[in-house]
Image (tube, rainbow, N blue to C red; front, side, top):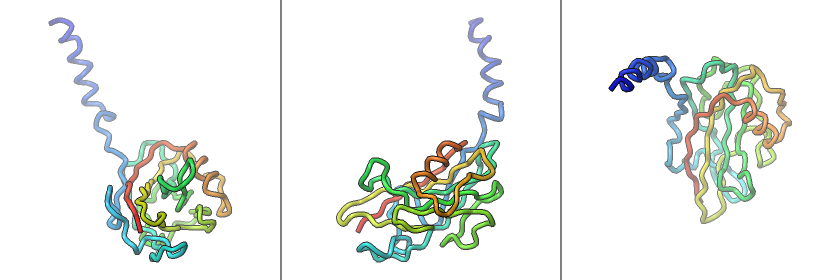
Length: 179
């Protein structure tokens, strides 16, 4: 009984601490939802796909303490190759940024869209192999650095490596696409 009462105070203090009640870092969208199929309007318009190639609207809240900037990525988790394929990478979003508008309209000054694995800068929507359903992970990354040393000519693999190496946290939505 004495050992239980000795634990009661430390446990109650832990439960009342700010860390115990910290809100989760969350990514949301009106265009894509966890586990749902991605609309054709967000799909790639080439390579046999016939989409609108419109980046979905993304919004996030509750980043980890110490966040100095954000990055946004979209990765095809099921594309051939060991790391899937990178459909979109945006870096150097200022710490005050809480959303990207549909189509990535009005990116903040200093934000950089790198090359995707289609070999083009900016957003490249889903375009899975015929008859296959692929999972696409939309992520926002909270970063320690105010600015990553990446320019628009950087390839996706380098940008992803730098993002992951600087990350404080990640919030994500995984959705699917097939044709």
